Image (cartoon, rainbow, N blue to C red):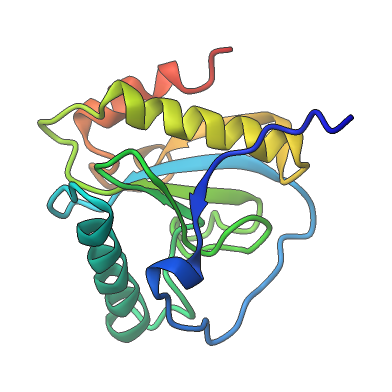
Length: 168
């Protein structure tokens, strides 16, 4: 019997991602999860979120010269989980901290708006899935981007909500 936790994820192919220039595989399960916000407008439906994902990937690859979208996963305003780089692939989300971490970005700006309980639930389920499938170390550390760099990211309201993500 398979007891792994699963979560529905809109794949790269489904949202129309461009192929990455290259990928570096993480050598072992991620020991840290870094939560971000995109600091863009909230997307409300799947089409709106998919358009925004293409925009973010374009910015990351053309303007920032990343090999791909920087995050491993993104959470839309519709609470849907979208695959960025995916499991086991080193991201480009937190300078000098990508070799043992996964980056998850909430799509929107969370300085003055709180993430919905449904969006937090989506991330919690994604984290449980990562642990059960061996992509995420069971004792992983959950951090906000600001814990590792001089930034407001992931916004005041999302940062305050992080304590609800690691509890059982």
